[in-house]
Length: 105
Image (tube, rainbow, N blue to C red; front, side):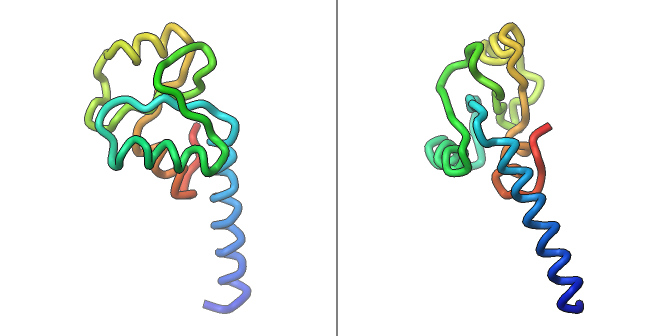
């Protein structure tokens, strides 16, 4: 790969990472279920890119992150999220955003 092509790829990767982190920055997340890592580690990563975390769903929460193995389960947190207008996302969606490879939609 030429250096110009590599520079272009690097610039695109940086833009995607910035967009992914921007989709977390300033947002509040609640985690539910068994995640890929310890909850404290995931919360620390969210906070490192400018997001906030909470332990319960309320009207100020932007995203409820449901563990991949629990998709479709109608837990109390999921029902509360629906009542509050909180978006339910998957663990994989959050993980990709934290890796800088996708935005949270």
